[in-house]
Image (cartoon, rainbow, N blue to C red; front, side, top):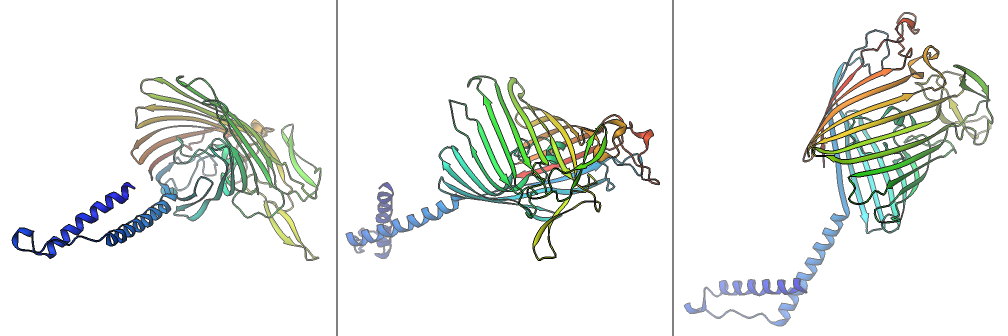
Length: 460
C-alpha cells in the first residue's frame, strides 16, 4: 500500500510540473491554470506503475535465485632435483619450476524456493576444461532435516569436503588422495543434520556411487560411502569447540580372473579368488576412518585449530601400483556385452594391498589476516611390507611435513607452503639407471625432493 501512495504522490508532482511547463510559467504571468488529472487517469497510471513494479520484482527474484561464485589459484611451484638421475623421489620433477593455474573454478547455483536447488561447477586450467560438480539437491525436511543429492559431487569424507579454496594446506593428504581419488563420484546421497538439542546437531551422510570416480560407469558394482560428524556439547560460552566423526567406504572393481595377488609375511602371494562371477570384486576397495577437530579460543593473537583423520583399508589395483586396472566393456563371440579388467601387465591378476594413513593439522591465526599452518601427513602404501621387503617406491611408506603462511586481504589470499617428504627406514627406493633395480646402499638416504609453492588466490 505504501508503494502505491508513494507512486501516486510522485505522479501528482510530475503532472503538476508538466502542466506548469506546458502553460508557459506560473499563473501570475497570465498563463492558464494547470489541468487537474481525472480519477480515471490517476487509476490508469497507478495500475501501470504497479505492473511495472511487479515485473521488476519478478526479475529481481529470478536473479536472486541464481548465485555465481568461484575462485582462481595461480601459483609457482619449485621442485628440488633428486640426487640420482634414476632416482624416484616423492616430489621429484624434471621441470624444476613452473607457473600453473592449479584451479580455476566457476560455480553456478539456482534455488527454487526452499525445496530444490541445482549446482554445476567447472574447472578451467591450462590443461583444459572439466566438470567438477553437477547435481540436484532436494530438501525433504526443513532446516536440513533430510536432504537428497543426485548427480556428481564430493564423496563424504572430512578432508574431501573441505573446499580447496579454504583448506590451509595447498593439497589434500596422501591417504585421502589414495582412498578418494578425484574426490568426486556419480551417485545419490541422503544427508541429515537434525538439531537434537540446543547447539547439538550431528551430521549424517549415506551415499551410493558408481565407483570409478568421474569416469564412465561400465559395471554393476556400486560403492557405498557414509560419514557421521558429531559436535561435542561444551556450552555456548566455552572457548573450546570439539567435533568427532567417522567415515566408511565399501565397494570395488570387478574381478573376472580366478587368481588374485595378496601380501603376507613380507611377500606377495598368488591365491585363489573366492568368487569369479556376479559381484566378484565387491568389497576389494574398502576403508574406515576416524576424524576430529578442536578449535581453541585461548590465545589473544587468534584462534587455534587442531584437525586430524586416520584412514585404514585396502585397494585393488593391477600388477604395477602406478598402473591401475582398466575396467571396460567388450563384445563376446556370442554378441553379448561383457566386463573385462585389463591389468597394467598382461595376464596379471588384481593386486590387493592393505593401506593406512593419517594427517594432523595445526593452524594458528595471527590476527585477522595472517595464518600459520603445519601439517604432518603419513601414508603406508602396503602395510604388509616393511624395510628391505619393499621392492619399489609404489609400495613404500612416506611422510610429508608441510609448513606455510596464508595471508588474506578481502577476496585475495596469498599462500607460501613448503613440503618436506621422507620415506620410512630402508624404503627410500632409488633406481640404478643402468639395471633399473633398487640401489640397496641408498635405501636410507633422504632424497633432495622438497617442494615450494607460492599461490595467489582470488575468490568471488
